[in-house]
Length: 272
Image (cartoon, rainbow, N blue to C red; front, top):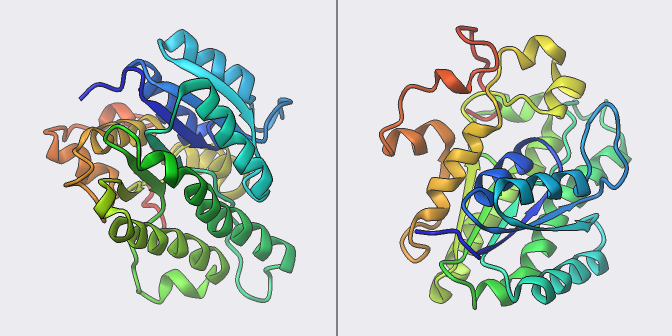
C-alpha cells in the first residue's frame, strides 16, 4: 500500500520517535504535519518544527510545520484546519506527544500530575476527537497511539502511579476508539517498544548516556509503524502492538542494526 499523497498528522514530530516515524513516511511520499511546540531550538533537545519539516521535504515528502500545544483545544482545532486547507484531509493520526515523570505519589507534584494528564490523556483525546471527522473520509485511515499494553502487574503501579495512569488511559482510549470507529473503517492501535529507545527523555530524564547505550534507535518504532499503517484499516484494529513482534511477523528477526551500541545489553522498557 502506498503512502504517496497520504496526509499524516504526528504530534511531537520535531524530534525522537515522532520525527523518525515522520521521516520514514515522508520517504514514501506522504504529506507530513510536523506538529509540536518547538519553534526555537533547545540545545538539550535539538530540532524545531521547521528544521524537522525541512528534513521531511528532503526525504521525499511534503511537510507542514505547525506550532501546537495539545493542551490547548483551540490550537488543536486550528492545526487540524491548517492541515485540511493544505492537504485536503487527514488519513493518519499518530498520537506521539507525551510527558513523563517516574515518581511515587509523595514525590509527584500537582503540576507534574496535571502536565502528564493534560498532554497524555486530555491532549490525546482532543487531538483524536478533532481528527475523527476527517479520518472518516480518509484513505485507509489509522489512529496509532504510542502507549503500552495494559499490564496489571502491581510493579508498574507502585513506583510511578501518576505516569502509569496517564499511559494506560491512552491505551484504553485506543481500545475504545477501535470499537467506536470500526463501523467507519478507521483503525485504532497502540504501539510500544520492547526496549528503551534513545530519545531526549531517556538521555535527559531517565538514565543519561548509560541508558541510551542500552537502548535502540527510534527507527525501530518507525519501521514497526510503517508495517502497521500498511495494514487494511478495516481488519487491523484494537491491537496493542510491540515493535519486535510487528517486525517478526514481517520476517525481520535480526534487530542488531537498531541497537545504539552494537552488542550491548538492552534495557527492557516499562510495562513489559
